Image (tube, rainbow, N blue to C red; front, side, top):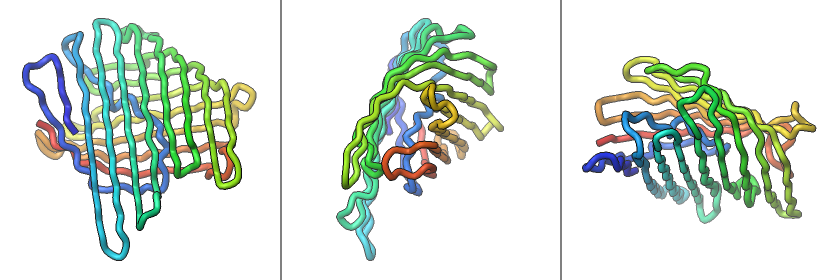
Length: 260
């Protein structure tokens, strides 16, 4: 993973080594808090690009390929964030996991207690049978607390979601307007341990108590000045899942970062 900061003449880099994951599910909730940056200047670009490939052969052949990308522009009053990811897992010629998403978000007047957010997202998960999910929405972001080592925000708003689901027998298209509410926190537990967490409650107004509830919790350990270890738990509970999908799915991932 290569990280850059256009406000400096040199380009730092981060090489990300994927130690492993447990791909029981991929909830595809986007933890935007992990990608937010705090800089002491404005009109600056920061971002990253990462690739991962693992091939193993024993009794079975397993191929895993990952790509990640993020790009942030910090303007004088606003933030603009673009995040993308793709996962592909193949075991003995069969696709076990194939999912990805791209997410764009803008935070307007970020220093205000109440800040408007606009977002777009596209995603797919062929393992679930989700051929395409596209959504567009707007939030009001409320700052509950912000200090040097801890911040907490809550956002609430509306979004329009369009999905195409497909299994062996039929294809279904769903389009809904949903409420979306999120709670996100970032903090430093100790000098060497940081956390970032976000949870979403998304529901149709006429089925408000039948939500899709998703969470992404990440903890980062600073092993040395240049070395980080990330542990991530992502989960989704859908009270009314489409087709034959499970109500509860989750994934556990770990990541080693080398920073320069």
